[in-house]
Amino acid sequence: MGSLDFFGTHPVFTLQEYADSRRQGGSAHPRTVENLLAEHVKAGHVLRVRSGLFASMPAGTNPVTFSVDPYLLAGHLASDAVVAFHAALQFRGKAYSIWKRYPYLTRKRCRPLSLPYHGAEYVAVQASKSIRNRPDLGGGIVEERHAGGTVRVTTFERTLVDIMDAPEHGGGWEEIWRSLEMVEFFDLDEVVRLTLDRSSALTVARVGFYMDQHRDALMVEDRHLAPLHARAPRQPRYLDRQRNSGRVVKAWNLVVPERVLNRQWEEVR
Image (tube, rainbow, N blue to C red; front, side):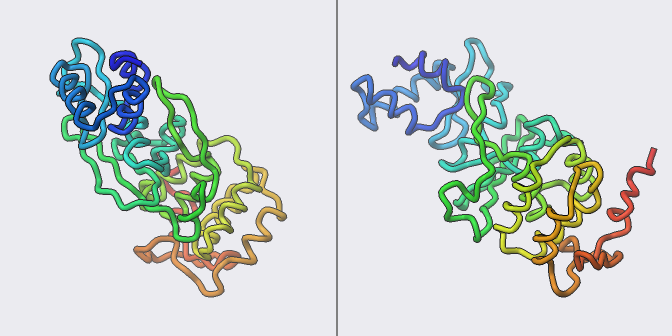
């Protein structure tokens, strides 16, 4: 496959992916590959996003104003990167607010990437220890076609659990609630399975409380809540790390701020 053909089918790619394509063509020496890419960057065919990561550009595109697809980019920032949290909801059109902050799951520690011209920030989030070393990072990850490439992204069920496990990547409780309420259906058995895999009583309580509060809308049954009740905290825990005051929801031993408990943002017009 020639370089231009490769660029046409790989809107975002790594140096290694390009090298593999050149190996099939018989010119895979590392210095040769790097020199070829440098020529294509100079010619305006390719944008160097950061060391080892590139984006293909249509002819005549200004590299300063060219906007790389954020989901394809996030999915290439680590070899195991998965678009997750608020970015996964936004990818699926279920985010209440549109962000330019794109968290992605990975086993690795990666530095944040900022693209100042586009106002975008990409943040690596290490998967929880209980699932970090599993081949599939605990499951609930699918690969979908997008913008001429493919994106690994969490399912709705995995996204719900991830956000309750690390709500700082969801945008605050109002944003989390409003976004999740845009999702019409969850496989609740899968939600329960993924939640129990986290080995976190606080995460169990957050998920259980959300499901309990949305029992009618999500068609939650007692059988869904029972295994979560069994793993809920034995002592009251705060919904968030800021330990904001609130009311203890005894069923989950969870201190929930009145604003979340009563969804008071719904009163604002």
